[in-house]
Image (cartoon, rainbow, N blue to C red):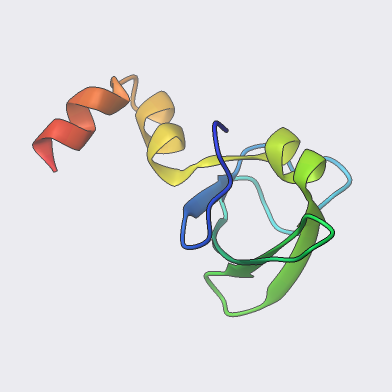
Length: 81
């Protein structure tokens, strides 16, 4: 993930030990605190916080995950949206 931005839609790519949610679950970044803890709201409304490192390891931007799953170039998808 290139940047972590409030409002970004993200998708769980690797649950590892950081999440009880299944791979493919989506969330929105809602807050980043002064200690670089990143708070996300899952599509079911539940809230979870992650360190920046955990987030970078386990999540991808939702559009990137969709493109990877469907073998499509993300620039092509953005142009067609």
